Image (cartoon, rainbow, N blue to C red):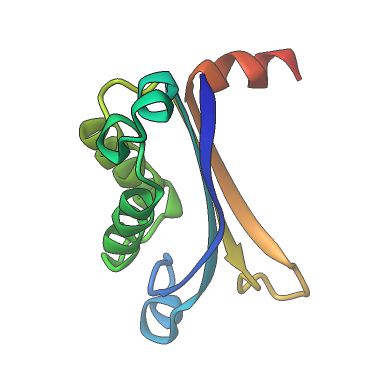
Length: 126
């Protein structure tokens, strides 16, 4: 088993509860970790037997383009699409950070993190 990851994917998107956020947009950072069995892919050197990280990026890109009030909604859509595209994976961990959120003071980011599958076990041990 292995973790296939994309870290620090940057997107400019128009998510937010407030009208200003929906008009002006903001910068987001995404980290995606997918736990998968890569043994067959490694032995056969077969891209189609593993989780293609380019596909992971494209899923994130498509979902980030759809404005939502909550990053929770965006995250759930990304998780669902990854699960649909790669049904044999064992877990997904997704972190979305909204850089410089409009909170009336200096805050580097607000964030949400999703864990399903084997990543649930890791978060319980923390």
